Image (cartoon, rainbow, N blue to C red; front, top):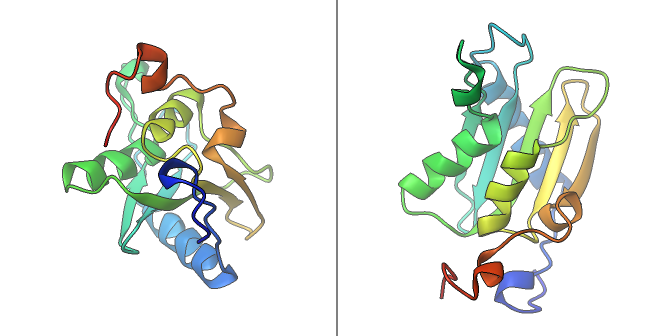
Length: 151
């Protein structure tokens, strides 16, 4: 990893790391609770110490309280004391590669704006973009005059 500044590190992913994260996201996808959309999603979030937190989407009849796989993984990690993230993979079944929803993009930007996001389908095809590429001009703590900035 080439250090440009704490918040703007360029994270290099090897093919092995990418495939390991995709495999973990595929496993998580099997646990998805998606009776309404029938669109199971799995996610795997890697921390700076290479620990992986998985998540799956969890739906509810009151759609607004459903939770996406990416946020489940991130909230699990944060609740266990981790806030340094190096990569996230998400896996869906469709022929098209899906990307995180806007809410997930915003939540990810709070912790890892320059983190690579591996978007894959179960066929093994994938694309990689950073959170910043997925959410240009992200709303951050800097927009609040520095409130909420982590040191």
